[in-house]
Length: 269
Image (cartoon, rainbow, N blue to C red):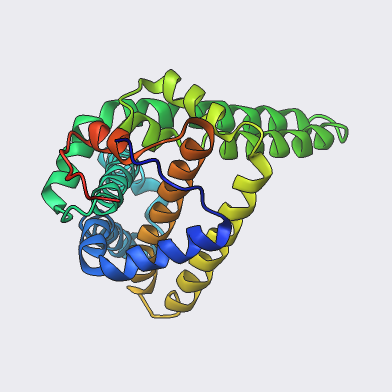
């Protein structure tokens, strides 16, 4: 018998987010720390390495050749690491939802196998949203009227960011390609855009407040804050993704288990 999940209101989503976070705190933290910790340390080392150049006034001349290439590699590493970590967190949340023990290795392994699709969807979304912003700012430099376009472009960008909030779970769990993941996310958000925006804002404000408080700690505060709050955002986004599927297509535990290639006991509810 199919075990259809129940829809959630914002209170349910927030409550379950912190329940899941607390229950699986160390493993979720480890998943985030593997990516953010390593990338954060690399960033600090790169920043400290460039400090002597800045102090001696040689930063501009030195910012060529291999240093420029190194910066590009660092940016790419941050992007790829963030997407891979996001996929691993989504898988971990989905595993515990089926009362399965979270495996850090399996979470990253599952995300790795779908990394190409997640990267492709993220790149398409970035190009579309970034293109709108770039064109708006470019036009604004030639005419004051162009600033109206900046406002319109900003609104359009926010609209698309919400419409495409679920491209990672769509690509990861449903096995969709980049364009299909964007279309799928848009379909799930359709007619619920304002609700999704409201929930994402609340989660963002909570995460931002925690990050701001921890950011006071010198040097490592930002890294610690990112590691602690990233799972919160990932859990809430995943639960909201489930909720939209429940409301639109009676999403069930069996469907989730099939997408994760996991066999579940009949008594899992």
